[in-house]
Image (tube, rainbow, N blue to C red):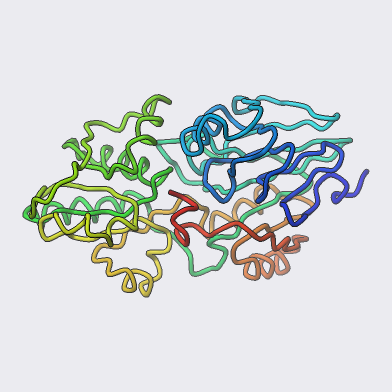
Length: 342
């Protein structure tokens, strides 16, 4: 059997596959890239050729323009492509619409690059599919035991109760434009909120893309520019997090400021942002999901790409799981940089 590093190895540009001559989620323009999902720290423009799911390619075109790459190679989940004898299969990662794990196979070795992933249900995207492998390459955004995210229904329930308690106030929710906003909307719909949801203009194009891909968001309205004050009492307004701190937000009726993020589990972060209603909703695996995935897959090795590697390395050591940290640079943590997940 070949060495694992012969198939995938970390480089300054990202994970590189020498026999296939391609990179996975490279942080700089390359000739050939495999992209796991559409967030900006994983999906950059300027590559010669991009292999990704059809949805991810659509997201990249929406965000960067139709000429974001010289060549697009779109595949469906579960479909296998080949380059220089290396097989590449994209299977669902459960992160956002179109997100995929890259399953790389060559000469009897299978390595899975998870990208970003979560294990809980998400009404806006296909669920994570575990793939047996020799090496599982995992993120570690919430790779500490303290990160145990509550059930989504509990957090949405808190939001609905607040809407009922304060019918005279606008509920202004910060949520990133790709993935989080649409998931929040769908969870609200499932909880029975059938009224029009008002959105910042930065969300409009991606909302339309989600609806073209079959995700029903219900009645929506764009918050129009204007100088009127105390508008939309009792309504839900969703905007990029930066907009909630901007002059744009001053128009609403005594707004309840909320923020949907896995980091809202850290009370200091909520206080720093002046968040009155923190909603712990993450599109990344929390600690139990990360460790349960390692336990389920039982790979020969776990490689950790970015996030809080030390906690997961220690867990692997205590549980007899071989592991190493790749310490790749250029990948932001969820909600740490708006450009990442906007």
